[in-house]
Image (cartoon, rainbow, N blue to C red; front, side):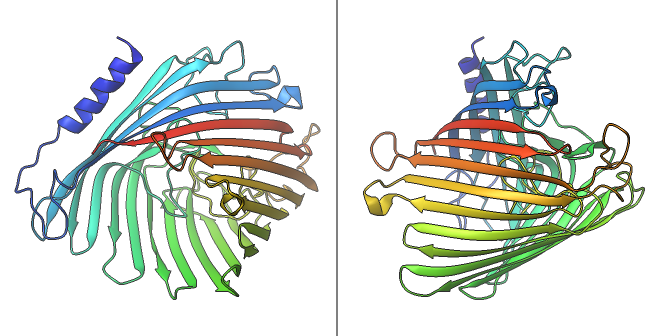
Amino acid sequence: MTHLKKLSLALISAAASFTPVTSFADEEKEGFIEGSTLTVLTRNFYMNRDHRKGESSPTGNGYSEAWAQGIIGRFESGFTQGTFGVGVDAFAMTGIKLDTGGGRNGARSSFDVLPVDGNGDAEDEYTKLGGSIKARAFDTVVNMGDVFPTTPVVSFGDSRLLPESFRGVTAVNNSISDLTLQAGRLHAMSQPASSGMQDDFATFYAGSVDSPWVGYFGGEYDATDRLSLSLYGSRLKDAWDQTYVSASYVQPITNALALTADFNYYNAKDEGRKLLGEFDNDIWSAKLGVKYGAHTLSLSHQRNQGDDDFDYLRQSDSIYLANSIQYSDFNSPKERSWMITYNIEMSPFGLPGLSFMTRYAKGTRADYSNANNVYMRRDGEGNPLTDQHRWERDIEAKYVVQTGSMKDLSLRMRQATTRATAFESDLDEVRLIVEYPLSIL
C-alpha cells in the first residue's frame, strides 16, 4: 500500500468514525457537524547539523541530516445542543522519509527528525493516530484522550516534522472576562519522532524518568489593554514541582513607536522520590524592546541562580524564557546570558508576507561545582566543569504567500551557529521548512 493510500485511510477513519448522538443545533455553536472543522497541514522539513567537534556527533561522523515529508490531519467537531455539550477531536499524521542514511540520520539524539530502528537507521515512514472526547459546560471545555496542552509549564512541541502529543485530561475555563484558566493531568507522552505513547516521561537534560503523571494548573489574565499576567504551577510526580510567573507590558508612544517589556520566572524544586536528585532552582529572564514601524529591536538578560540545569519535558515547548532559542537554552547552573534580537517586516517596503530575524546570544559563568549526580558534568579528569561559556547566532527568513491559489503557503529558512567550551556542542545548523495548510471543512 502506498504512503498516500495509508494516509487517506487514516484521515477517513479518524473523521468518519465519529457520529453525533444528539441534536445538531446548539445555542452558542453551530452544532456537532455544523461546527466541525477538518484541516490538513503538509510540512516539508529538512534539517542538518554540522558538528564542528566531529566526535560530538551522535553518528560519530560529525554530520547529521534528514529530509522528510509530514502530513498532519486534524478533525474537531462542534458540540451537541444544550448547556452540556459533547464532541470529539481526532488526528492522523504521517511522516515519510525522503532522504537520510549513511550514518547521517542523527541516531537517537536531540536531532529527532525521524524514528530509528535498533541499528540506528531511520524508518521509511511512521504514523501517529489519536483522538479525544470533549465536553463543554458553563464556559469550561474538558478534553479526555490525546491532547495538545499549551502552557508555560507543559506545552506540546512542534519544532520537528510532526508535533508532540500527550494523553490524559485537560480543562480550559473562560468564565471570567480576560481570564483564561487551564488545568490538566497527563500520564503519557508521544514525542515528535515516535508513533506511540510512552507511559513514562523524558526530560531534555536528564533523559527518561519513571514518573506516573504530570499535572498543571494556572492561568493568564489581561489586566489592561497593555498589561498581561500569568501564573502556573506543575508537578512531574516524584521528580519536580515548578512554579511560573510572567508579566508582559506594551507602552505605545506614537502610532509607529512602542516600547515592550517582558519578565519570565521559574522555580523548580525536587518532589516525592526525587528521581532527578535534590535541587531548588530559580531562573528568570527580562526583555526590553522597541518597535518602530516595521522594525523591532530587543535586548534580553537571563540568569539561572540554581546549582543544576533548568530542565523541562523532552522536545516540548515548556520553556518560556527569552533566551531559549533555536539550539541553546542558556539554562546551565549559574549561567548568565545576554541576547540582542532584530526583526523586520517587509510589507512597508512592498514585499508583504516577507520577514527577517537575526539574534546573537552569549552565556557565561556556567558552573557545575554543586550540581547533583543527575545533572553533573565533568571534565576528562573527573572534575566538575566550571567557568563554561557559549554563544549562538541565529538567522531566519520567512515568506507567506498572501493571495492566489497558494495563499498561506509558507517558506522558512532557519540557520544557527553555536560555539561553546567543554559543556556544550560546536555546530552549524540549517532548517528548511515549507508548510501548506488546507481547510477542508
